[in-house]
Image (cartoon, rainbow, N blue to C red; front, side, top):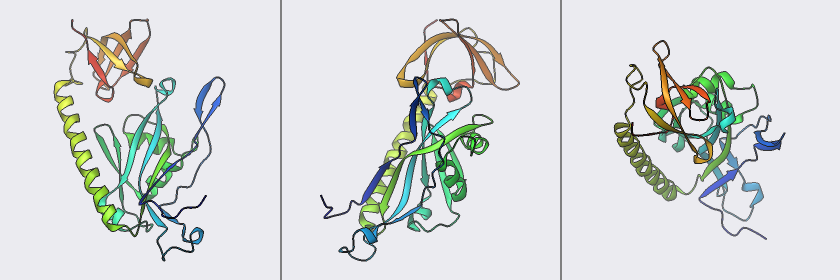
Length: 241
């Protein structure tokens, strides 16, 4: 089969997981992610630079301290608009990590290292980037490349992304208001809640303690398990007392 027309947006899924010891685990391999793709030599019949792409976003899998048994979670990495306009030129422009309602700016070199992954390669840097712990493992699993020559499509995708991001942030703000959490008092001690784990599973428990030194609450699950969380980082459903 042959390609008669290249897509304006090219989405690539990377195989970064393996099944070992009865469970799915991240592969330790480090992968150098290019910010630009030049595929013109593969399509000589197309116009010059018609097969050139630049990286416009990525989905990263993250394992932070304390959630290895939960399977980790996924975050988004996108460039600032100015970076996208550079069409893949490897300059030290700003990128952003989107982790729920938390937005963290990173340089292009930092973005490259976070996407590359590899066990132990970027653990401390990843931990600082997600802002939740001292260390984490992070790797790109989905890459979104956009055609450098399709300006109209780029503008449409960017406008759509801005609208979707605005709607998402508005929904997150409303959700935060509805489910406001005090992380500086003991007001929540004794309250029952359900905490979201992997695969959309919720487990119920009760808050038994608040540590003022680190802003974390201790949760005693109904099955006897005890965990300590920064509750603002978790997805929670409150139960009636």
